[in-house]
Image (cartoon, rainbow, N blue to C red; front, top):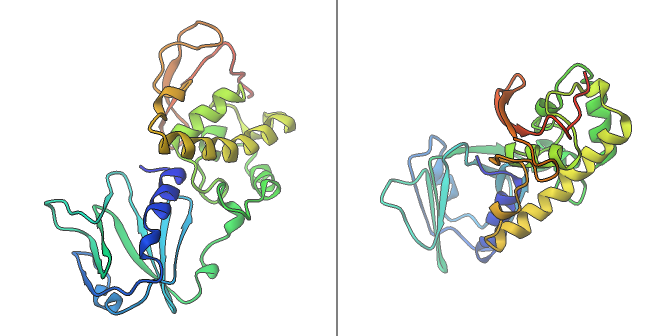
Length: 243
């Protein structure tokens, strides 16, 4: 599943279509796609893993889910979920969720929850974490209403950086460490974006899919953790377990 930085990359790549009118629209999406024909795209936005195509009175929300893809000025052999043709090119989405959000987009999203948004609010994230004292930090970090855009790669790398075991309970983690985790979720997301642009993301991974801890020269443990049963990679020596 693409994480927030990958959706930010998509937003940057499609700016050529901002302000453009959709001349043709097609696809096998369940929404009324004909509604888009003749419409002008006013803006592209992102909220975490959601890609938003904004029109004057509604917004199309694209979620790439686990296996969604897109193509700009080219096509795949499979039928697209949504295809938009412009005078200067085309934009095609495959194997994704497509929904229409009526009215003002701001009524659907709290931009303070998006770790890559200018309105990102670390204090709000801390308040939200304080309301989940019994939850494992590995689950809390993946809560999109606290850390919108953070996915499993970022979760693993942030907890490794902060030396916190993924099965630590939120209410038992010292406040200074929680604040460090919150800050790193945003910091790492932007680093992720830059590394991805330079095609060097994987070489910067310290914990995710790794076999050995670079700090301790001990084995990295792999385990499905938390209620979400997502893969966690961690060192039991340097990542402290708070329970």
